[in-house]
Amino acid sequence: MNEVPEFEYVMVGTTESDQNGMPKEPGSINGGMLKREDPIQSPVITISVDSIDQIASTIEKNGGKMIRAKMPVGDMGFAAYFKDSEGNVVGLWENAQ
Image (cartoon, rainbow, N blue to C red):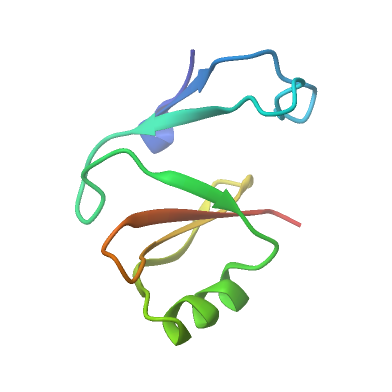
């Protein structure tokens, strides 16, 4: 595990990663853990998207609600969170360009 103290984040690996941090084996995942704070109080599945802004409007058109707006994560990218129409919290990740 690698810590990223400035974000209170610990990276967790379940499989070997390539030089870009992506799992080498198809179907495997890696991730991380954050300190719990409102509105995120449980484990969250996070989806990588090309544009959080574009996806956010689609989410809201389909009954979801953004609960944490797009925010920068260092120079790595951006994160946001939403509740789907059934109340599940899901994360969004957009790589920095």
